Image 1 (cartoon, rainbow, N blue to C red):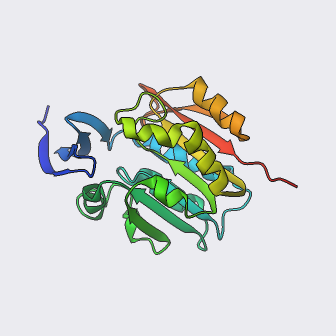
Image 2 (cartoon, rainbow, N blue to C red):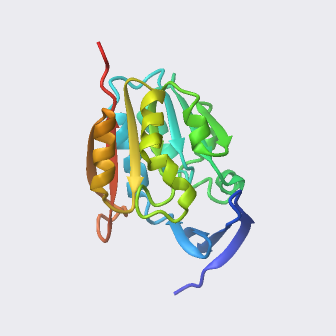
Length: 224
């Protein structure tokens, strides 16, 4: 088996070291020495946008926010799911991840950052959420609601975080959330806020074999 080659590394705003690695055609991002995401496990990242945007009543002239750029797969799937008149914003905390997506990772998802519909925000997605209204908010941050690798991400999935997302949505707006594991408590949190919410189990890899990940689709009902 080919060894991993480290291509680059940088320090994220929270102080953790993020590194980019390559082995053959596979790319891997590590955070704090832990494997964070691989280019082989793109299916669930794409499913986040596919399922989230499918719940929209219409897909042209919509405003979509993607929280977490990763390897670009969620952003690509969002672009493929909406019309030419859409705005798709992506918020990424680590500038190095944006740089890699403009460089060695760009080809993986078909260079989504070059799409004219895309705006990039380097910083905390919670600050960008407040710039709504959004028709869809798609969150792929940390490992999901539980377990977290960074305690400061807890606020995104807390009661206040769910309330912030709810208030930032347009009528019939949708929140999609990617997670490494299921969390019934998070489903209840969404429903208590007023969302019509359910969770779907999806394959992590394009082969359809191996582990599964979980996608919440939570829709804000319009109020008459």
